[in-house]
Length: 520
Image (tube, rainbow, N blue to C red; front, top):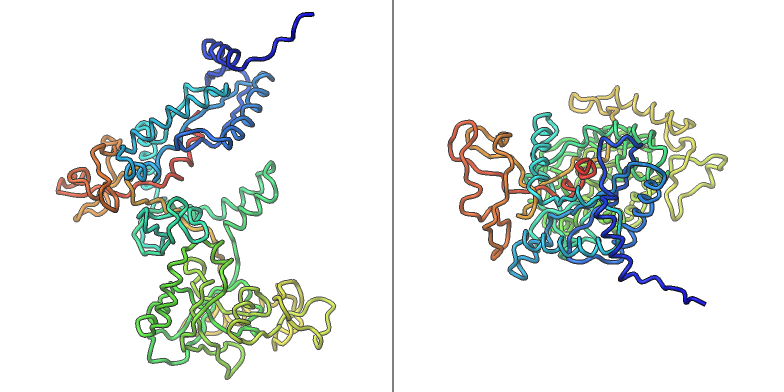
């Protein structure tokens, strides 16, 4: 009996891989008449070696690509490298290697490892996001966005990593620490470049209905991320105080129907009134400073204990004559949503409830659940956020929640505070513009020039790409592009006078946001 020949991967794998390469089995043409099919996995960061997470990810994609190819499709299955980023600069500081040399050496190693797996990639379409040919097109995209009014430059609070000395996106802050350095993230006010994605909030929200193949859970997460909310902008009159110049506090609320249950006002630590008070009140200044050491990630703020500091200010209750409400600075109110101030109704909002219990504030229920005896209903351990009818609410009593919202909006719209309507109906979105500036060397240069006479001047198309200089050093903190003796000094394209290149580079999320299109 002939012995069974065992499969020898060290022999068979290289043989078949060479056969596939010689016959260009996985190379695709755009004009192939077969029906096209595109398989794309998230491309890797060239950290130095492939790990089992890569093996899992690319094996699954390879199964799909091979299946569709066997079914007669013209399958595009490309591979590339998400190659800019801070780890390369950190390696340069630690080892003395240049980020470019470190990155491309890692790519060579990882490419060899991936090829040894026999995956069905079309390697003819390979690129790295640090290739000049790639980031030149990214600079052209940026300038197109700038021309179309979709880029803005403004001062904003940002997550600052004091070790890596760069801005971090909220997603890069884990438990209040930088995802690479592990340093406690601070908040700083910096002038940054933004892509105006908030202009598309409603369009993005409507488009989710057309994503029939997406899981409901993911679409819900997207809707919450965009965060459309319809509510009332409402003015609360301040009791006179020698400490502030303001006469009213403006809040945005999605639950104006609960106004009779209001028991406090809360300001964001970044609210202008909070900043004004902090100049005179050390307790408020210390509270704000501590808040700024916690980062800005919404998820982290939602999980944090609800804390605040009393300002000493009070506002007049707008529907309970003779009553006033205390004003706090609180860590759960964000400046970049609504007005940066809220009124708290603890009985019907869990954050407000937690805050009220901590500081001994009133909890006044004003929404009665269906089929409930008003004499017996009480809020015990959790706020009631369900449907019902209004009670303890004077002229709103007996109205369902939605009807009460309309009635209270009409009521406040007819009243004046300082020659302004006390209430104005408006729509807000939680989605914010995308901050793309990073204070680092190893990234795509932002193609603008700053001129004292003409302000921000786009780099002319003929002068693209703006290439990174190779002769940089990493022997001191900060952005090497700021320290370079010549690179940032250029004439203004308009007047020819001495001007300065932008030294911020683009976040790697920009690099990896459009590679799916570049592969094609």
